[in-house]
Amino acid sequence: MERSLYSVETPCYVVDERRIMENLDILEQVALQAGCKILLAQKAFSMFSVYPLIGRYLAGTTASGLFEARLGREEMGGETHIYSAAYVEKEFDEILKLCDHISFNSFSQWEKYRNRAIAAEKSCGIRINPQHSTQTHGIYDPCADGSRLGVTRENFRPDLLEGIEGLHFHTLCEQNSDALIETLAVVEEKFGEFISQMKWVNFGGGHLITSRGYDRCALVDCILRFKEKYGVEVYLEPGEAIAYRAGFLVASVLDIVNNGIDIALLDASAACHMPDVIEMPYRPPLWQSGAPKEKPYTYRLAGATCLAGDVIGDYSFDRPLQEGDKLIFEDMAIYTMVKNNTFNGMRLPSIALRKQDGSISVIRSFGYEDFKERLS
Image 1 (cartoon, rainbow, N blue to C red):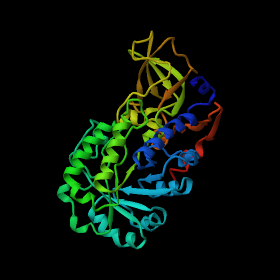
Image 2 (image 1 turned 90 degrees about the horizontal axis):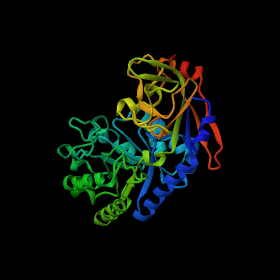
Image 3 (image 1 turned 90 degrees about the vertical axis):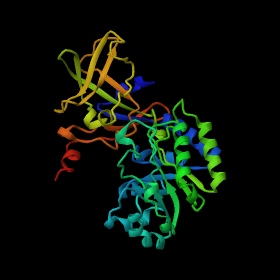
Image 4 (image 1 turned 180 degrees about the vertical axis):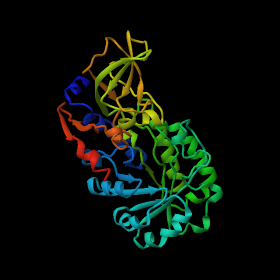
């Protein structure tokens, strides 16, 4: 099926509608079985041309700031939730117009905006930090020492809970249900006395529900138990799960050089087009390739920017690479389009949608003006 992607002009992100729908079918079943609501976390995936499709399955969107909130409200509708580590004063009135659920990162932020939020009849929550890490990626660990995200039990203010209807915690990153169950036990231990006072609890994101190894039965049982015990509504807000393995980045080989290893320079860049390769870091899957030296010909794949560390990874192939060859990176929908940039004046990849019938249509292309108009 991936062979059809060779027809696109590179670089190009291609999102597969059929795979999106397969993920949404799974999420819809989880929501029905668990009696919970699932939201799209736009920080991971904001390709709004497919929002009407997503909106048929999910309850709405969640945002990290004003622009995401507006995008979700305008393009999908449904419930619009927002959480920000700190709100911008001049933006808050517009946030009140757009969002029905607002979570605050601290009690000082709650005190600052409380009266306006209550007057606007918004459902307000406070983010808590259970201080229990279940992952090794420090850059994505909200429970790491010194984290600015969420209120710890030591700093929790029961005296300021009037008007608060929900608790929000987000501690996971592409993890299974066992990490949630483990975290939830700590949340109950530290904050359980306040949960029954709430109308809802948001379990945050990072639940890779649509992956093959995810224990969805355990997730459903966990949510059902929690709802029965505390009498609250439960929200999940995954981003990765909606577009997991549903996107590709098609790139072309520009040149091949050698410096102790064969290096293929591409028109796609780790630094510009797949920044999590450097930030996380990780090695993205590449169609029809192997691990280094697994196949006869090994290459280091890299971007053409001036950044020495603009390296995607080492891969092996059945035949030598040549200038003009196209490579198809997989799982390139999440945290790609939302984080890409034009460092070095690099062209942003086009965005395309592969429909269920296999046809591919380009949704958006980018050029010089997109680079220029960001700078002055």
